Image (cartoon, rainbow, N blue to C red):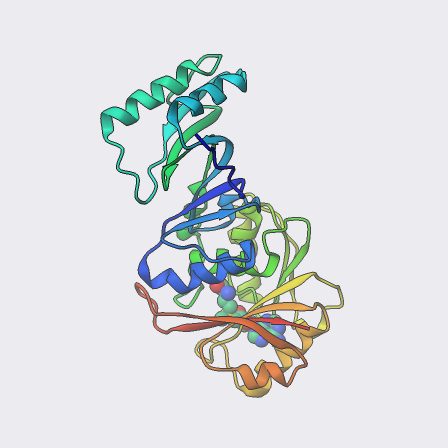
Length: 317
Ligand SMILES: C[S@@+](CC[C@H](N)C(=O)[O-])C[C@H]1O[C@@H](n2cnc3c(N)ncnc32)[C@H](O)[C@@H]1O
């Protein structure tokens, strides 16, 4: 039987509510240059699932086959030795394999790997899945959900960004690259900084309001994170960054108008060539006047206790 060789190394599975559909697709475009479809994405690009609130698992393919016996033969040929491992069945869209059969397959794979298994605290998770009649065996990396602790950060305010939006802004600004320097130009109580620190990004924050900066520092200290945060107008910063995030003042707690918005964007534009901006109105004309072009955008609808919809603008020089 002819065996398909996949032209991708990773299978990503996603989990999100329908109101986050656009946000998740925006993130996918900037991490993978592609959009997830039916909560699945096949790619050669390696992304840490923990940076996203939508990527549930990354399945790294070791071997594949259209024929199950052939798959087991291939796994044995890999001569895998692993201590403290576990095998999980990953059910993908369209896979109708029943419970008993799945258990049998997990057993087959367990017997094909040398070493002790550990069901409750595995050091490594091997996995099997079936998609469109092809069997895949590989290593499963699950999202570390510890970031959800940030939802109960000590200091917050009613218009703080949600953790889902904050994580997406970092993914989009960084394109998943943890070796670059990021700036949160209007950091408020540090919602974005917490997510960036947790996922291992280099980030600094700045805010003109002393109370916001104090709360950011207290929030960071609460989770033992360290990041430089400056009590400053962004116009007075003089460092260079690879990308910046701006959650613009909404004219609710901090006053805002077109001039203030333009000044913040223009000041940030002197520090970087890539900016991801959050606003509550259409600011495309203001962005275009700063010499940046809008390369992508997305609407984020109201959700939960959120009072207003937001717009995200990806801007490049
Ligand atoms: C919408 S809030 C940001 C909220 C933040 N993303 C959070 O979730 O906590 C906008 C922030 O911009 C700050 N700000 C306004 N003008 C600024 C400026 N010129 N430079 C730096 N920060 C500024 C305000 O003090 C306010 O904290």
